[in-house]
Image 1 (cartoon, one colour):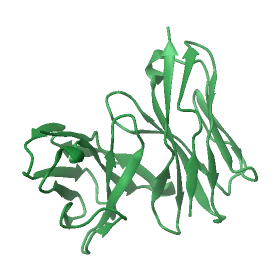
Image 2: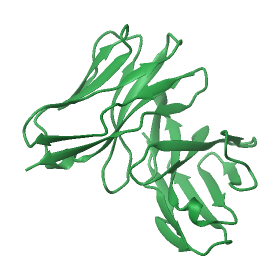
Image 3: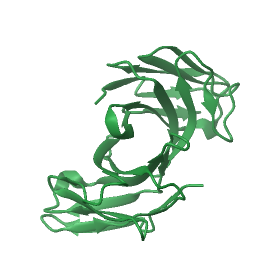
Amino acid sequence: SAVISQKPSRDICQRGTSLTIQCQVDSQVTMMFWYRQQPGQSLTLIATANQGSEATYESGFVIDKFPISRPNLTFSTLTVSNMSPEDSSIYLCSVSAGVGNIQYFGAGTRLSVL
Amino acid sequence: AQTVTQSQPEMSVQEAETVTLSCTYDTSESNYYLFWYKQPPSRQMILVIRQEAYKQQNATENRFSVNFQKAAKSFSLKISDSQLGDTAMYFCAFWTGANSKLTFGKGITLSVRP
């Protein structure tokens, strides 16, 4: 299994600013994932972050808006840039660890943009 | 493309009763994994149960069991002796090596009544 610490747990931000979300894992993992989730809705994959390579973004998400860093095998950050109220959502970090392709999730960051 | 369908948006069950949550999926892959995740109001996504497609035996984890019908591409979750702590949103998810990503259903909100 894997234990994931995600910070901050919530934040309220002003339009036009940026927020960086941190994801720390208690073990080395190859693949880390960033998701967005509207309350009561399903998860939408933003990007996959592998250590040592550029993140792979899903359709509808671009690096300029959601830059991701993956400096080592236990840590990643997601930045939400130039925020607008439409970016208000829950952002979740996830890792693939252990056998059977199980993904483990952080507790999420609830972002509100005013 | 892989798709996961959860057609029931919400269900309610009396405490101590049994409830079954439905999930169907579509894929052309022969080897894949299926998952049920639970997301309580605290937002933490928790793995409930996992099923490998090549295993005919249905997975079981304490009060949670699945009915995996590969030919019908059906993967339902049965919760026995429902408890108040089972109140959560439940997501069915699907993983293949073809894209190494989890595909989630829309989720179902389960309420356990005292």
